[in-house]
Length: 313
Image (cartoon, rainbow, N blue to C red; front, side, top):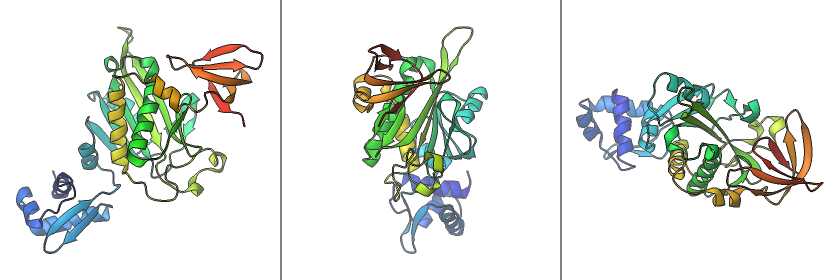
């Protein structure tokens, strides 16, 4: 471990309390000058460190991502990359390389985010880009993994930020009428045994940012949880809370909560089936398998397990 990494680790362990430069130097077996240089380097990277000539150093909560920050926040193994194509693709590579499951992967930025139905996922700077890989035997109902991920994410956002969240079937999370979270899940099947080996849950949260950074074709549809200022929580804290919630929710019932959060129930919608057409309908429920129940204008009812719906204004 470098002196700089050691300094950061000790400051993180202190939880905001002041640590003297001499104490840090003694614990790392280095000079006070090496500690001072490391602190200056960390501050240049964005860490909010308060330095007092007579007392020492303290780390103020800041929104910097690093291996050390994430490892302190997460309850399971976590990997960090400053930038990648997609945390989803990076997680696949880690699985192939033999990474122990479960684990999480967090990226500072991603430039090739993957969305549902083969779409790209716009990933603005300042967002939370996370993939969580779970063991198949830790998921009691794989068909409901996407549903559980949406509730786990919405709950974490509300718990840490106070921002109210609602879910658009199946798994898009909205706040203040705009989409602020996208979720994608994928299972990896053992072809010999016929069971689920692992599942990847990719989550992108638009935490804070500027409206003008949103592409014109997405303006009015996509938004930020905190478009006008700094978020009250760091990306590391939010990513860790989402992960903990996702792990915990697998062991409890959650469909009633999902129905409460699903804002299209009772609304007029347009059912879109790619390559087949669009039909006006009314959404009247979600069954215990997470399927949307719709009634078309001719009175015919259907249970949707896939496809897309939009609200009719």
